[in-house]
Image (cartoon, rainbow, N blue to C red; front, side, top):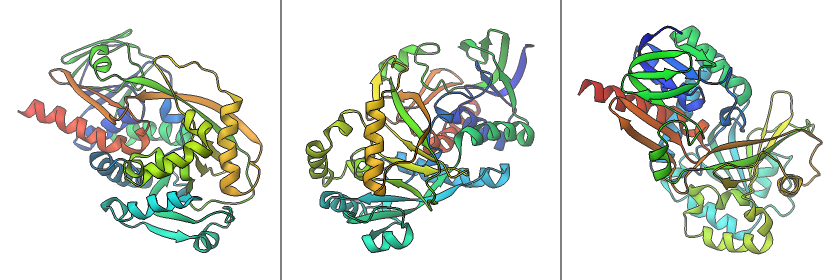
Length: 378
């Protein structure tokens, strides 16, 4: 690999790295993206492809989700990415869950959302079980793409439309100001964005350790076509104590206490329900959360069963046959949603530390690039 000169070098071709590349390319910068793998293979393709706005943590996280949703819509139109469905149906089977939704509707984050009763839900999404259903929050903001297809297509579009250079299969050994050292040679760049995903040890491990970043393992499944079509993504009561936009509300305390009595196993394994649909009709369903610096690679049937039990409760029917099972890992840092550090002049270390890369990545990429080139100008 020859020594080249770019305006921006991005280390990591996951969604955050691609977001940085897009933000810089839109500024007219010459960009290179470097990744040790032959293709994107991490959390960016092992997820729901569900760009979630409603329920994200109040403040900067929520604002970044709104902006990221806008960029996804722009990119989908330009790059030919398919939006498979839109919106979110957050179902509530307990009075305490309804109280959380009613409180959420009083916040600024609920703009465009509305509370549906069981009959409204039956008319709009009849596949959901209405027996025991009390209400549902409808949000129009969410988008769903097929990550395993959209992320590679996004990379190809960045190369073809914006002239972004990709150096696949090039392990980065070190980063200095204005230089990325790879196993295949050095690359020079005025600015460098290091987006390591959940690699906590290779580049700048000290600020990562100082932020107490660990890794989260999740389990996910793909189910056969159930014979119906979802008009939106679906979540349940468990999500109301998982997503900070709801969970931080005082009303969520009573719901959490009831869930601890009734679904202790789901809480123990970090299970909450997300169901989205693919173009072939199959359903992507998950997920669970287990934390460790080095999570084991093994999925457990008992955890999958907890996820599928919640599916059955929400849809009022046994789940369709399982077509695929997989695990994924992402960086996690407790209540911290983002790690953004400047370990060297002209260098930014950027990580999404809450498993929401698809939901906030484009906005964070814009922030990273604005910081880097603002620093160079000043």
